[in-house]
Image 1 (cartoon, rainbow, N blue to C red):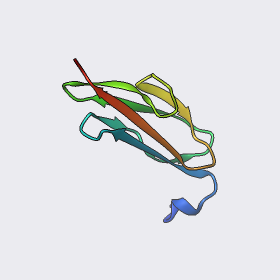
Image 2: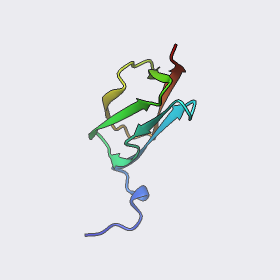
Image 3: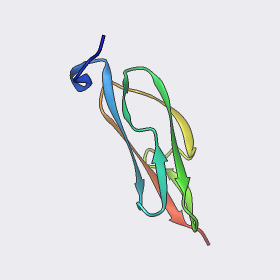
Length: 82
């Protein structure tokens, strides 16, 4: 069975992953996932930067999240290295 508009199904939820500042690093693993599934999100610092934390306070740059029924946004914060 193929679904053409997965965003309308109640068991899928959007996970958005962003980096701030955008030149500080990159992030992976955003998209639509089944509710209650677990997925890994990661942050990778560019040269001259280091990962600080996610905006929810978690300091693991690679971590597992559980997808909730509400759309989620995780922002990786990067700071300049000395």
